[in-house]
Amino acid sequence: MMKVKKVNYVVLIIIFLSLPFWARAQAYQTPFDSIVKPNETKNTSTTFQAVLKTDSTSWTMAHQELFGIVIEYFYAITYQDSAFSKIYINDEYNTYMGKLRENADEGKVWFTNAVNNEEYLMMDMNLQISDTFEIKPGLWSEVDTIYYFEEKKVIQFNLYSWRWDEPVQFIEGVGPNNAFSVFSDFDWFYVTCKYDQGELNYVNNNSHFIGCMPDPTGVEEEKANYESFVLMPNPCSGILEIKFLDDQNKKVTVSIFDLYGQVLKHFDFETVSNQMDLNDLTNGMYFLRLEIGTSIITKTVIIKH
Image (cartoon, rainbow, N blue to C red; front, side, top):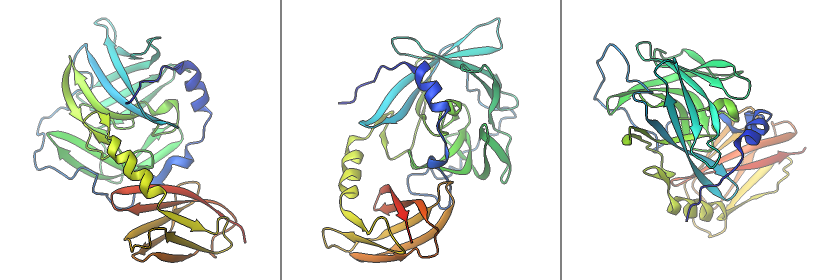
């Protein structure tokens, strides 16, 4: 049974601002089945659907802890005499996260950080393919896909989240799927649902969730796949072997990334035991990403010649 963890987010915010974001970033290469495919229904309005539609807007947010996915509830308070809406977490402290400012005609949303009170452009629905955008201060990404889903425009970037197995997206009327990224890693939070005056306005299409909540069966499947193979030797001097313990042939896709998320090598296997030649990689730590069926697993590999 999932429990909502009560924590002091003021402390977490300070800690997360000091963390590097590179360990969770990679260039998005190929769409996975969990990604929403384009819908023919298109919003032909001259303006964009507003993120802050009413004085009662809220989001269901997910983030990962060591023990699993935790759900938090964010809500906005809008004041008639102010251009801003304040954002809070619905916890025992009603933790203040910052404030939003929106121009729906331009499709832009700005967010002011509660920690340093600095405003930055959080979303721009006017971006075109190949445009670049600063997802988080110092972290830029390029638009690679634009499509419409359920009358909402979706702008998709080539920045992929290992936490949620999904690229960063701007969703019309909802906001970025990685939400308030300024507080930590660019993908620390993930928007699972959005409500306006208590009415459900958006539901994610991520295989990690059933509706707004984590999928418990997916967790068990991923754990089983995680324990179904071994990598040896690790540290590796050049040749790395992946072997499945059940002696069954499996279709597996393996990608090797450096610490900055750049894809260095790519392998496709369909046998029980397979070898990967990593001799041309320099000494250091790398990320190995395996796709086994519907599961995506990430492990670290040390190269030491």
